[in-house]
Length: 328
Image (cartoon, rainbow, N blue to C red):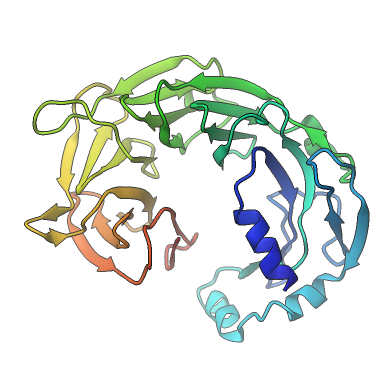
């Protein structure tokens, strides 16, 4: 189907990044587009744009698709809608049945490398990417996207405003959760790479602010496989083989709290690959051994484990109300 074909395209690795505009439907009579009115009434037909084979091609054709028709074809369970209403939260449905409209992208400077991932800053003003050439690149959104009315048919290319080079393969990276462009002190991100300590980079200057140096029981430096700040930004969680190490962000260096995840074959096995923090003082950790475990933030005690994955877990995310955990 068109929907499954679109999903396959989204999951494919590309040597460039693109930014899309998507339709978001909110029940209970609310309507939002990333916190701003993008100049399009959600009751009006959404634009469906097919781009050419190359990212820079001008939009070839525009098809009209009524939002109500998309909702009808999305098989939304009335059960899910009533659950959202009962919890007091607006139930949002992203309209994935309508092809997204590409509004900008970056392809020229990434043509000789493979983009491994991209992450929005907390305030939504810029995008951080990693690629197989061991570079972290920072892209600001084009100014035209912040001006109304927006010409969605004018495709613009983004150029990186900052590049940070790691000497080894980049394993993971994370924005500081309190980041806002209005406060330069909060504009930073952390990265972990092969053969290196964890680096904290300044998102304005590209300078290295500090390093966090994990080591093993033999006092040998080890690289973290995954990293994530907690919700407050005070702690930096790092994933290792059967181990989580927690740094105090305000105290760089070798001081950290060590939390084994598997002792005498009891607990969560494997390399800790990702984290997600809930609003109730708990966090989830995924591993490459197909498991997800819930821990207490205060002492790192294992609360319970979830199984069912057929492969390693690489992504985790709590719902905004903290009642659901999404894993992939």
